[in-house]
Image (cartoon, rainbow, N blue to C red):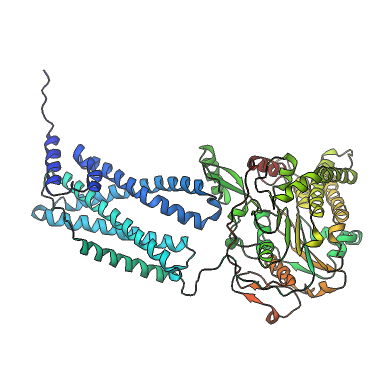
Length: 639
């Protein structure tokens, strides 16, 4: 015979339930939601975990969307639309639910242990401890949300009083609600641990008192925002007014990756066009870390350091369900974390894009100043903005090869139809040029490498020549061929060193590629009437990194004013020098200086160029994400 004898704990639970109801804790809907575990479970640990989980759910619902806005503002490339924001808010809601739930459970159990031995003072001590726990959580939450707002709004603080006031009022409401939730759950756990001890009655505060507390919290948050925001920081306009001092000349910038200054010096007498363009009017650019071309060439394009422009690596990560990207951490630990998150399908590999960039490039600045611009094949230019200058992104060649609707690889979109019509001729010319320069020989692997790189450079040059160059004020073209060749021929492997004869043959192949490039670039390097041609080189993905070259040439000697031939510059000086040559004012935020002969006092300056445009791109076609990764892997850029 089985007796239905009540468990001793059932009586304690009933007492706690009746006590909570009698003291008014179950009157409010929020309290009934939070204290449900206290009505159904027996042990204090179970009550703490159950109530903490419900506090976590409440925190996730409140903090997830707010944190998503802050993260999206801090990492612009991560959120590319409403869908991305919703998915990111869900991720962060789960994160905050777990974190706050654990914190609330620990806080409740700790408070219960502090009150357990209070004896006759149990009621008053339970009230003080639970109130202290609630206020600690509320103040911490308010401080976090205030600093989050400072980060999300780029530190404009009280220069936008309506938005800031609304944000702080919302922060106060969220913080007070979470503080109240922790206070109530702490009291419930304390009562469960006491085993029917007297709890303090629920305090129904008057609206004036609640309002006064909210005002005090608002003033504290406002003071924190003022203290943490630099007094001299103001909201930077996205498009500050730029007045161009007309110089009556067009600028063309040719960027070549993988140029070794020693090999160039040896071949200079044989390089008719490159030798002339990189002649006496040139500056030596001090070595920078060129192990990642996306980072190095974005530094040149923006004139600011990677910490400012935000592009740190070719390979990034895309969160599952989010179209934007997240820069992968560098080093072995970053690769391990990236591999682990890829394995569980939380992230997947992606390629650096314009969405990550947090500083304007020189062609964007020139275009916003009213000049007609075009850029061809530069790193981190995809997705191209729907409006503005001509942008042939680093994915344009793939799109032209595969056809189909655009996914922002080329802008303006009307240019795609023209290039598609000319694509067969561009492709056939590039292929024939490379095969003529590097015919199949006994050493077929080396010839294959040269032909592949030569065809790519010839394709890029052909696209550039197809643009209306004569009607543009500023054109820039990036050529990766020499870097691809030297990495494919000289990169070390686990099989050991090259034999001296093999190494000599590979060095000779690199020299042949320089001669090929000299002829290929002849039309682009020709400085006709009214055009100044700049050439900038970098050593590519080599160790140790070497110096770069920066030169200018023109038909009538005007280039001599553009670059001081005795100057020792840095890669950060390229953008200021080019913009100064275009007559565009220089920003005080630039990390370099103009290398022109004009005195610094004669240069015109503005405080900032503002933040990059966030206008949407025209993306109706099938994305080429995996195809781009496969192409870069075949060229040796990603593993």
